[in-house]
Length: 360
Length: 95
Image (tube, rainbow over the protein chains, first blue to last red):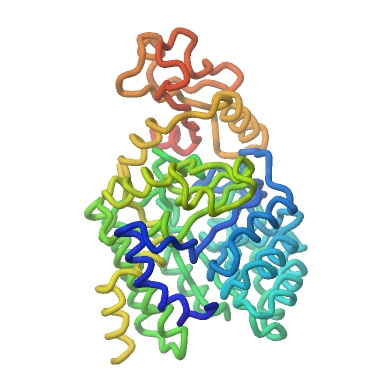
């Protein structure tokens, strides 16, 4: 079942699970956050200040074993995930236990050890697509200012070059550029798009800066206004639509355009525009073993240490029921990309538009 | 402000017993490591207790000097809905 076809076949079952609670299914899309530690000092994120009683590698192995072959998509997040000392072993465990279709790792590109770690991960997890997304929030000193690290842009460029060289040897490795669109760079998105376009990266993706319990950014003025975001992202949509993609990239780019349009609507309407599937199809495991439906709400669904590292005990337990009720009742809304993409896969109108676009 | 629901939602979340110690330790580290955090603000709950109401509104504390939540006389104890928020240097620049 570890192909995109397998994921699509599970959509009807997840729709039933969300509506009626049956059949009981484990999530397809899991974010693992082994540590909040980070060597960036971003204006849009405060997670790097946190310290946790982190799960050990042995504890992670038990958790991953309890998930079996259910997850298709893993994101190893942070903090800076490639700074986590056991990141290679964690990715290997995820691969050994779950055989996911995709292992996605964002990175700030600062540490010189990143390419070597990526090489080991992609070299071992040969049956998974390994996607490394390098963060880019501006060009030159603008990037350094937003990320709070002098010289970061130079290190980003060096890391990108090394990763692109690796990609030539490792067929399962994709390199992307990822920008957080915030009040600090919303007016400079054009130059980031142009840079990404000529960079040689496989993809350019953006996410809006948003308040999250995980990042301790609730109430901070980092999210661009609906109008300024729309203006910037309309240009991004025009850019994506001008480009010619082939194969799977056509599908992912069509979904990406749908996502950007969805974010515009969420900002404008301040509503859960399409049903959110966080808590059914996607979830996050935080560094200390706490399970969240998503990192925006950060509801404590239970700690894996208290449940013998068995994810199922929490996922099919009592505490999650109230959280699922709250999400289904649209008591929350947000543009979190990771959850939004899985939710979009379960929205027939979105799938219809993507399908129509592909037929054109 | 976008996503107001999240602010209300977070006020209602039950806090861990070591909330004050952990949060202030994080902010202390943030200041020491030269992040853009410049201190901590207490954001009282809508129906906060009298001691919380008497706190100077919007005052930015150093994490070492910030009052511990829940405040000693708070009748809600562990269910206190007041929160710490990081005060960021760019917020002060805006003001």
